[in-house]
Image (cartoon, helix red, strand yellow):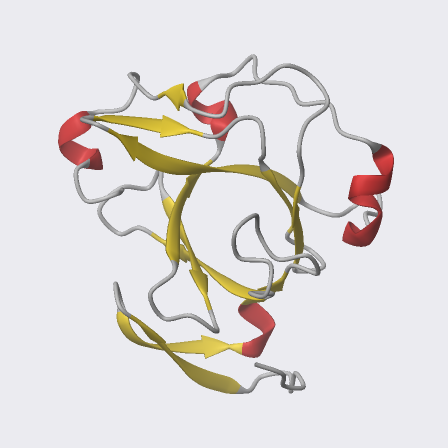
Length: 157
């Protein structure tokens, strides 16, 4: 799906999870490389989860059935540090005053929820750019999220 961005303009996108959404073009995220497994999906919207403020949803603009639950891993693992190659961050156009966030995707593994710390998403919220990176240090692909209240997380993954 190709389009030009008109500031202040709104488009409707379909989501199998959230129904029809009115999205401001200025709220869309651009991922030049897409995500692992979704390389052709370059436009996304980050949606708040009204039932749980610890979780957000990364909704594909192009694929209505692709909505990925994400968290800030540092919220649950304050000591989480990631090491990435500087070249992996180049496309984010980071400047000193930009707001940078790290997100990780939540998955279900049996009855447990896990998050991928090996391939986090780095988001430059100021520029609305994001990239999924593979960290250079040892991190798990499926870190258990035992710290979460399972009742509040049922609808996530």
